[in-house]
Image 1: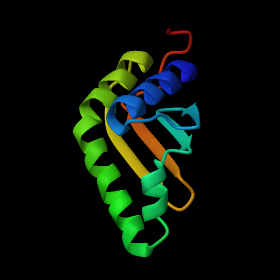
Image 2: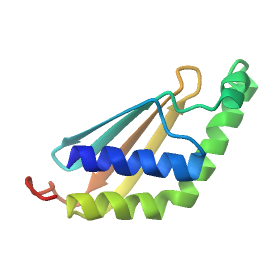
Image 3: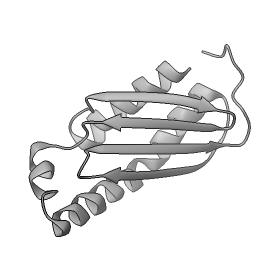
Image 4: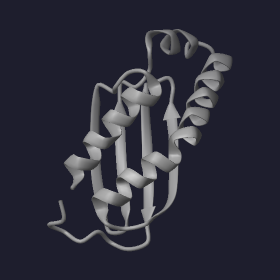
Length: 114
């Protein structure tokens, strides 16, 4: 299940952000899905992130893109876990080039599903 979530996140990043991350790890902790992505910034974003103003620009752009794809992302996680996604929380550290997603579910996923 964690591998399926990992693959869905990679595909989402490729489609919505234009490139995939260098590394993705997904973990299910009770009714939470936690995903850590490393190496998510484009070369242009890495240049922007060298200043405080650029960091804010990168964060805002990424937040806007996630907002546009939020429903699709929630649907994919819901399909994999067979649980309803209640919330999607995300943040990016533009200086590290890492992003974290946390999905809250209405219940714990049933193990052995998919």
